Image (cartoon, rainbow, N blue to C red; front, side, top):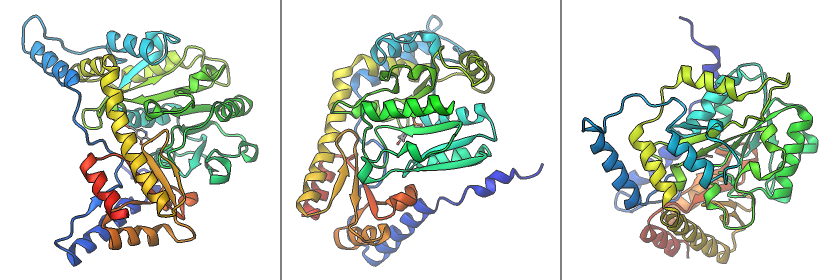
Length: 385
Ligand SMILES: *Cc1c(COP(=O)(O)O)cnc(C)c1O
């Protein structure tokens, strides 16, 4: 067996390694100082009781003769798919168009494998690093980075982009914290149609939107002909460790040659995936049924984000995002990302994420998150003052 050459393209995750090294060096120098992390995009609040009750009930049922179940459908339990269709998409899609997964990132990986090598893949810059890794692994013919600047509301100027086959698009965005507007997404859909490209829309933060931005690419008319939406319970219900997500592949979606994509995806997924844990899927139904509970946790994170944002603004930092996603994108004001990272670490004992790790256009920014317990966030706010 020879080594797959594309593996060579995956650089060591320089960002996380370097952040860890600098934090470690600080700890050695200041063994008694407590550091606060505002760097990791992971949930911290406990699961809802309605969800844990259901996880327990389903587990116990599996321990009985009557309640035992073996393999489920590869594409996911019918009740969960129907619940998603109704509660997230107002029954705009049927359960045959919704596929349950063990998470958004897992399905994004499978989707890139499904579309195969040799594609031209467009990616927002800055963006979540997983997209370009997936594109490299899949031997993309070309990776086209779409520069997203503050002047353009962190939305790329699509007039400058040549033809591509696949577009990764994340809104609300990690790391900039911005949600694209209806008009912007309309431009994206028009561009995809013109370019005969397909959009892989990552909606993992959709439930965090507080303003009027679309919560799904499918709010844009005609988008079901050009877009697949990948979604997740990770941030919506704190399932980052529990693992659950879904992917919408509309029946109206077609390849350039006119063949429908949905039956291919079903065939593909039933080959390489053997279904999601039945216990976890029961927990997913419970999470979507307790909308009030889920929104309360999301409000908590968004309130954290607001506290941090207000404090940073009072200190004179230009801060973007944080309204429709729990991320703040802080302009280092001419400083390098790593310089400001070091300053926050050394002077305030705060761990952040250097923006340059998310792409060339992230240079000169750092990312902070509102994921955290309130006590920790208030401590961070105190230190920022
Ligand atoms: C957290 C996150 C997800 C969720 O991924 P899972 O695999 O479902 O945990 C997806 N996309 C982005 C950009 C994220 O930050």
